[in-house]
Image 1 (tube, each protein chain N blue to C red):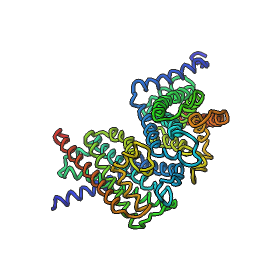
Image 2: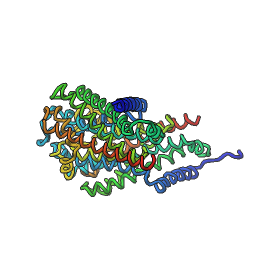
Image 3: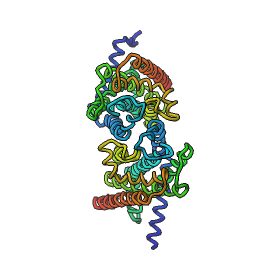
Image 4: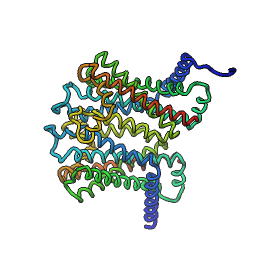
Length: 262
Length: 263
């Protein structure tokens, strides 16, 4: 029990450090806010008339529709940013010192992910506030907003875990940074920015089965229509799936490092 | 007069050519460095074409077989913008590492040094343009005609030069590679706050006003004309004039920054 408490304290401390680190390095934090906000603003103004297309779902406005996409984009970037910071820690030897300490190695990873979760929650609150200021409505009200914050924070952890596993494998920030364009490939192959039925092929087919689309739907429904049990469960299952995959990859990478003597 | 170097046009051109060749060497020796400038606009082009492809079904959208034809000009300018901004990042690196100080110690006139940097960017802008055009024709973009293509490539080179001047002005001011996001974001905003996704009449809210005011809209429309219609002088000259204005404006900033740094 005391070991569990000790590890929980380590996770909390490393999580706090991770949040402070992001806040102190504007080059890490600012793109997470600026880039998705710019893209959201340009896409809403540029493609806003898409709501007039006959097959477009009934929505209050295009901004309402796009908010979920912007949040998923931001938390994908938050996961990547957390992984870059983790890789920088490895390059600087900080992670090696932690690995040598009498704490669970998994707590080191969970500490980073705790920080990423906080960042995800912040980004969700930011986009909800931005949406409300510019006229979006959340049909499910406060409960819907809380759900969104939880799912976005969970998604940030899931994507962060996958990123950290790559950082653990490679140990270099540039490789993790190199994944950045890939995030957009995954995003464009989902329904983050447009309804699946209006995407062109082959994106439409890929988006239908892309687990990221399930997360987007789980975030979008409370905003544009109201809770849907199917969409909410699918979103939770997707977040859980990504998290399990990421943590499994992290565990394997830690084992591989330990065997190499790293 | 002993030791005084007289810089003729020919010797200045030689200095500029040497700097262009140095930038060219980087493409040959570090081909990986060109990948981000090619990859990002290509991913955005393919992604946005498949995402917003059905916007062309909206009433008032120009008559075109494929949204790729409408979008490719934006991607061409984006590619040039990223490539130009990279020149600013490379200069900031050279300043940080002291290489630029050594360059300034040579007796070449300052404008020739600056011209060498930005002209190389305008040529390098053709690398992402070539890849993007190949991809665009593969996914169904219409052939813009020879005149349309020449105008497009000329303006892409101009955008590469303008972006490089913007990047170098910032590099002279901040003297650190940390200014890279500012160099890229400036071009990103300038190019996307136009008729990037849809024609002016279909834009909504603030973007409609921004696109109307933004001079890059004229450049984009001049690049686009061959891909979605007929090439005309009326659609060409505003783009050329705007591009010349951007190069002069950012050029003045960059020269001022360079003088401030070396004074």
